[in-house]
Image (tube, rainbow, N blue to C red; front, side):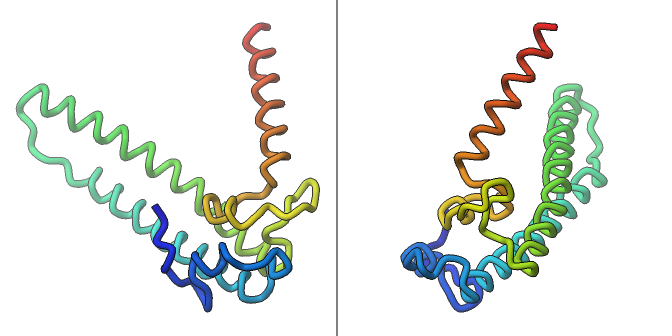
Length: 148
């Protein structure tokens, strides 16, 4: 759950949600998302560091069930590290799109992605309609490959 009073730049989440459509991706909103992405980048790096630290600090385990639990925990931590390491370049690409003035607009259609979608997924590259079409296409091709 997002803290609607959380401030990134000059705007809070509540203020950015309440802004009129005519303010879409103005300088204040770009500053908001720049700061939001920088904080996301920093917290993601911290999560990766913490997960790796946990993986390196293996406790002495003599019980088989404790060892199995530890191995399961390690598998989960490795998935977290993998997912978050894939997120870092996406955050950097989003920051570059802000720099270029392209952030907040669908890379395929050029339509606004939307504040709500960007708050939920600040690295979004596509508007919801285009993303849905892409996912449907991927699903269809995956099914065809399965059947082959």
